[in-house]
Length: 216
Image (cartoon, rainbow, N blue to C red):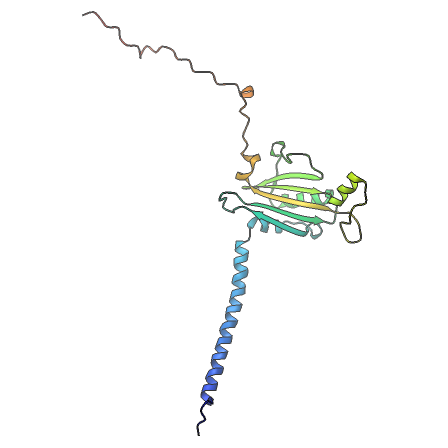
């Protein structure tokens, strides 16, 4: 005797099968989407930031690292500018030493930048570097609390747990060389240094003189 509104054994098995198929499909989508997401994220991440992550710098010299990026990777309108700020548990001298060693190991070369590195005097250690089509500025300086203590003579706010004002602050700025004014600036063309080009002096050219008419 059939009962209206009740599902038979065959219909119940079919529903369970479709539920299992839907669960398998959902699982495959999730398992496939995660690697795809991380793959796209890795591929689209700025390669310069990846190279900074690969620097052989100890963990104590790159704590609380924060990145700021602006501009276009393909230099559309503005070229990309990258800046990383981090904190070090050691002073500027030791921190500068490990960063410079890591840059040399990664293929960067010191660059004097025509005495524009930096453009004006700053506290701490400021050096410039080049590699391929990039320029890099490395600035390692005392924390702001140390500067406040030195200039004001007052007790600075604590910069680390325990109320101490130690360590240093690290800034790394990376530009495309074609967008770096220090690279694009050429030699001076000041007339006082190079001399002015004299006005051209034209002389009579016998080949251009009109022939004197002869009497007929």
